[in-house]
Length: 127
Image (cartoon, rainbow, N blue to C red; front, side):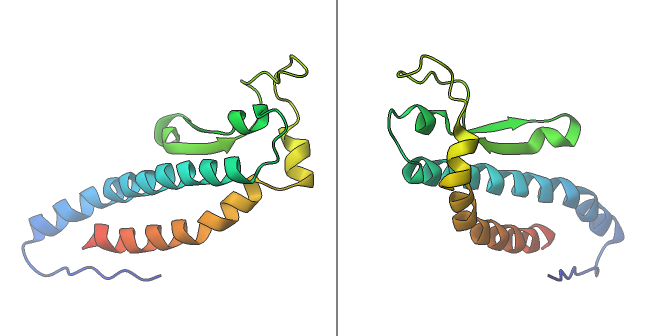
């Protein structure tokens, strides 16, 4: 991907635009990742094998990190939800994912859209 910037005009205006560019790009990337992680969660919940619904209910988007990393998003499964049959927290998400990939499938479905949105949005941020 290549991005071109028109550097003609008032130098102060150009400097101001360039100074705000990294933050604009990070904000846009965060918006894209947040909405696409929601889509990944939805697809994973449709694709996961369901017996009690506990694993499906445990699929979620989490946000975290420190500094610039607070913009991180993770789609996770397991924990937080009690399986009604066992009375334990869902601790088998990894085993199910290994045998019947539901998260990997969801990510693979959404990944091309994320790449396309990020590429087109970064060009718009520069302009």
